[in-house]
Amino acid sequence: MKRTGIATLPLHWGKAPAWLFEKMRELAREISLAIIKEYSIKEFLKKLSDPFWFQAFGCVLGFDWHSSGLTTVTLGALKEALKPEEKNLGLYIVGGKGKTSRKAPEEINLAGEKYNIFPSQVANLVYASRMSAKVDNTAVQDKFQIYHHNFIFTKQGLWCVIQQGMNPDISMARRYHWLSDKVKNFVEEPHAGIISDFRGRLLNMVARESKETRKQSAELVTKANPFSLMKDIKKIERLEMPKRHPIYEVDFKSKRLEKIIHQAHEKRPKNFEKLLAIKGVGPKTIRALALVSELIYGKKVSWRDPARFSFAHGGKDGYPYPVRKDLMEQSIEILRKGIFKSKIQRSEKRKAEKRALTMLEK
Image (tube, rainbow, N blue to C red; front, side):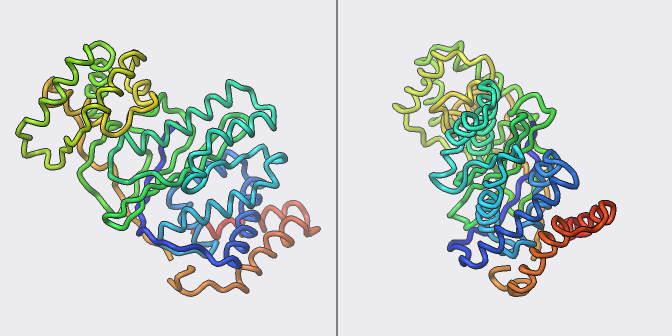
């Protein structure tokens, strides 16, 4: 498993016109089936987990080139497009925007029952869905609140995550991409590439530099007396913070935090990942433990934004040019009839598929 990227986009409101969403759904279906047929489902998941490829995919479907809506509408269209194909493909898309995002674990369980997926496999998938959201919302505190979460998975346990957080104060959204792969855990440098136009000062508990802080945080909750730990947390509120850390936030609600600390202490988490997985352990709990670990116990914590790159492409809002419905319909027909229903030789058919897919690689 690894997180494969982050994208930051202007936060736009509104919805796609019904006619555009329908065409996006049709085109998303044909492109997806072409990729799966020519390559594999594994390769399709890999492409979705690439923030650059996904951005290009949304642009090909005709949505805003740079808005937050590209994520939500593209994934909404993709989910509807592939829903009728899930039995044949063995590929399932759960979650969505707002309240629907929180239903992802429930939808994974339902898919498991419907398609006879091993219970242990379902449990692993549910854990991956929850932890990817928890890491991006709690372990990396970049002030973007997760409001959209799509979990795309196979019966064999392959999966990818595309989720998005919003920061209304700066009118921006940030998209996070994950891909199941060869990383041992969720909590140390899960990024292969991170893309953002906005960089800030933030608590980054999954940075390599935060390794000792992660260890100390789990030990504090497990081994320290909760009442003693709360005294240390309250000390932080009275400390004069070092100048190198301009964004410490210590507005903890002591009573609620104390309750969470006691609950976590009873669970005895053996490491930071287990701590993070505990229900109720949120951003303020993790921040409090990080501050105690650094300021009282001298464990280094990272305050760097993991974002490294930025990008722009070019939809619905008229840029770089207005959506042409006739061209979208033509593309859909080329993919649907020219590739899947034509009677050309198999070798020629493969060439046609590759030419169609090249649109997304450029």
